[in-house]
Image (cartoon, rainbow, N blue to C red; front, side, top):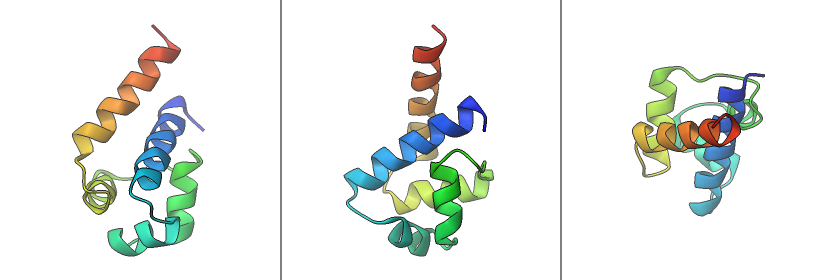
Length: 79
């Protein structure tokens, strides 16, 4: 598990929770499997760019916003 994957997982959990949807709902909206969402959120998998776009659209945000938050988390870890 890389720090980047872990940070992305944290961001996705945050946005999914704010959207008040389950992993299953996010997976359905993005057209991916629920276990894949779980693996991404736990930092075990790194999504492709296409999947990141699908997930961000499903969360009513943009990939750049998600990645900006990932960068912020990483900056907080290594200032």
